[in-house]
Length: 391
Image (cartoon, rainbow, N blue to C red; front, side, top):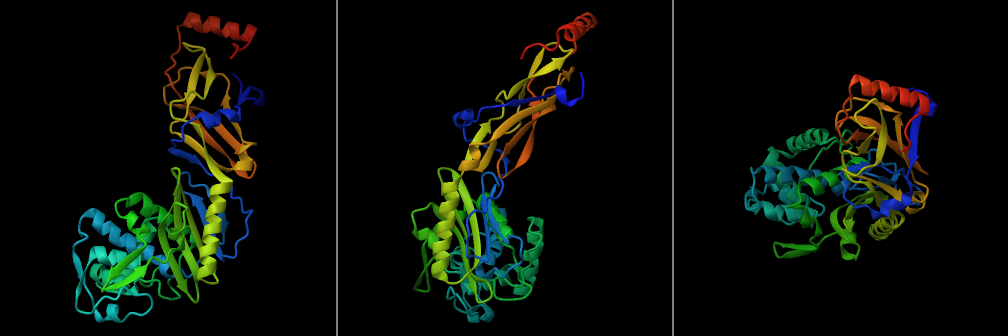
């Protein structure tokens, strides 16, 4: 056995086989960004939620005023209390004078009344009620300031390292900032961790105090699979949207901000979502348990050992890049026995244009023991005289 380059085995598989495999993925590979589309949005971020592949980013890590899109964090704090059981949808919270007087978009709660959690959620999600946010903040945190501090602390725990919150509403404040990427991460958390509550985001209207208001999310009114999440607008932020659509089991999350008006927000959000679904797709490669290759073995009880991936594997690629995708198996040949089942012994290397090359471990599917001394001796002689067996 040698460590030289000539001893490396590199097997290239035809991309034709990929379409025959099931789209059942747990392990993903991220495609390179394909920033081939211009957008007037000041910040933009689109990714495939199934694989994590980034399809578009523009100033995605710049701190920005998130306006009402930051209400997704307020909603998250409430969802978590509901999920842990310390609150129910029928519990009520009191309305303070501060909440009642709050300007901007409103649910129109009445001072010195109590409002059900279920109504407050819809008041925030559908109506973008600033008053509803303050009711929640004061009810759960004691004060809006304390609740905002708790929002920031929880954001850090969720991996949102740049986001800071000064209030529960998204009201303009120099200390209230998020990034487009972290808004997308938060949307993913909501969709994955709160499936029992997420359908509220798709509701198109809500009536409270005999006042009916429509959902501000323009994607909900188009036939595009959209089912969330939240709009935002202030003079500083411009017009923004965190949106999500699902088609044929594939979900994309979009974040845009800094657009000029509501019409441009609607048009650009729909255009970018259509582009992402049209230009990219998910391609299944191998399922866990599929035999990816049979690696040659040195002085083992068998000449080869089958290799597989530990988890189902897929890639998200542009349709053009997919045509040039190359998949290789790389390992030091031959692999010395003994080999323990489940041990990583090779790498599956995937490359394509505009995609960072990714390596995924391949593990042995079987145990391979060492034979007795006589068998080892004869095998060594055969290898030296005749070379490795044909594969």
